[in-house]
Image (cartoon, rainbow, N blue to C red; front, side):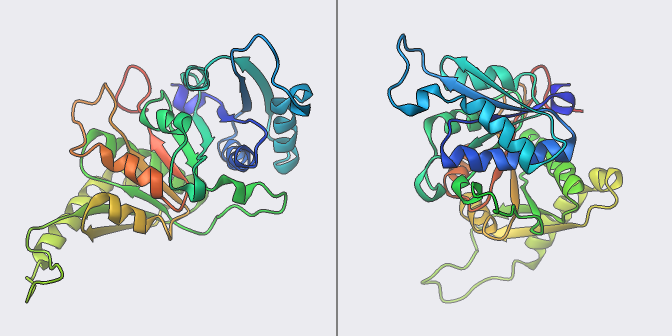
Length: 290
């Protein structure tokens, strides 16, 4: 399938944001020994845009920069004309991974292209928040933090769990499987006392251990931790993103027989996450890659 054998594709436009996303894409291409395609999309306009940038080959420059950063990575640049979302989605059909930068100020609001790709694409999409942080030649990408995956038992969450195990194994990182859970007896300000929810939390952790068991058998060298975070999912996962190197989330896909109970959680986390977020989209024709 394209997920396993396709190239890593990164959208570039010459901005610091896209340069930072390029750094992450080069690292991913090196990790998976994949070709890196730096893709620049020009608007459908009869005349070239004004300014000195019109004579630059942004895609070729990006590919050359990626080869300097990661010696041995086969990087090529390509430029196409069209609507960015449509062009990037078309390339995603044959890609192992699509990488884009979040354009929002402080990584708190998604650009329209990034938001659209976060909702739907035919391969996993890595969204790099505050990507300009990684644009400098001497910037060091985080390598020591854990990979975190949000899990709620849905088909999309099971797909995200598979992707997260592969990412943790490829990085040699610890994997933290997180499930946010809410209970009507959770203490809130104004309540005079709280209840003992130890058994409820143990049930959440037991379910996470059960879900992770098949993948722990396949990836025995991955150090796995399960955590039940009390509270609303979007808020809990946003807090967790502050100490993660990478967060993996599932998203609603048309082929899924089970849909997430609250699909807005993924979008809300994307808007506020402190670390890059890998959205585990489903490939065409099936609920997950094999």
